[in-house]
Image (cartoon, rainbow, N blue to C red; front, side, top):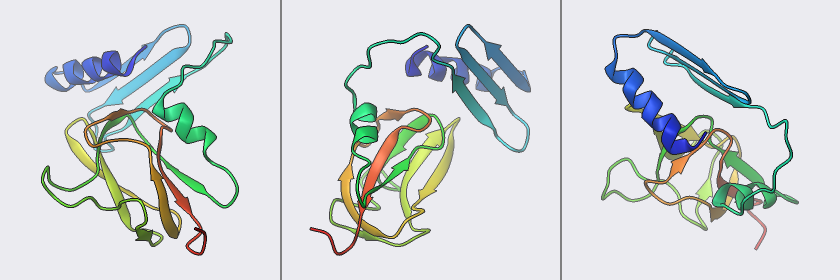
Length: 149
C-alpha cells in the first residue's frame, strides 16, 4: 500500500462518522481512532523478499553510521521544516541542536506534531523537503557529533 493510498484512507476516515477503523490486508495493518489519543498506527510485515527502491528513506537509513544519529518520523504525515509556510526552518545543515529542541513538524490528520531531537549535536543532513510525505520510521534528519567536521 502506498503513502498516497494511506493518506486517502485517513482523509476519508476524518470526514466520516466512524470513531475507529481497523484495516488489515496480507502484510499491512492500519488502525485509526478519533478517540482522545489521536492514535495512528501503520504496520507492514514484509514476508516476501523484494528489491528495495532507492528513495530518500532508504538513503537516510543507510546513512546512520559512526557517531551519527538519525531522527526518524514517529508517524505517517507531511513534513514541514518551519512553523509557517514562509517561516525560517527550525534547523538547517550546520545548525546545533539540543536534546528536546523542535526540529520539524509532521502533520497527520490535521494535527501538527512537533518532532523534537532526542540527541544533541550538529545537523549533518536533512533527507526530506518541506511538504514531503513521510512514513513511519522514515529518516528525516541526521545529527552528528558537534566536534566533527
